[in-house]
Image 1: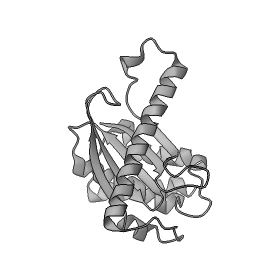
Image 2: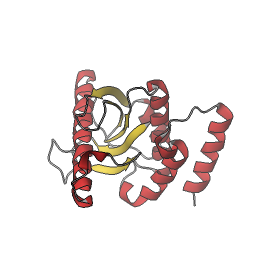
Image 3: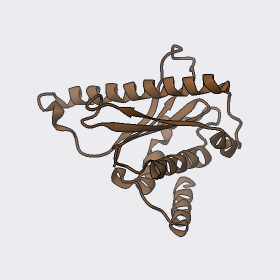
Length: 196
């Protein structure tokens, strides 16, 4: 089961300080945890928001470390070069300890594409190869169909389309085993929905 999916910044943005990361899109799957029984709904929302910010900061640090070690820099995107950007993307995985941020131990998979990071937080028993494939597929659709790397791309205004992508590719947070034919059918559905 996927716990949550995030799209956030990993390179400095003019409105943020050098060490910050802005969450552009977040989707949490599964039932509310019972750890906040005595909190109001607003307090639970703020706690959850802070947990997601901690994950985003850890991913930003991992991306920065990976790029520093490889000597690559964060460069601006050129419209139409989304496939090349995805092919050159940095990726990684790390573990969150027991009850560090979520009720159980979790595994974080991330994909750093230029100034954006796509992040999946999964349960530790999930098939990580399947989760990585799903993350790359979601990132590919976001980059190609929604043009998230283009100048002036507003992820916040395209959240309904990202929701539709996740509904088809990660229904209720479940990773899907896809054969080639079913994957092509899903791709056609997504392209037809996004082009509307």
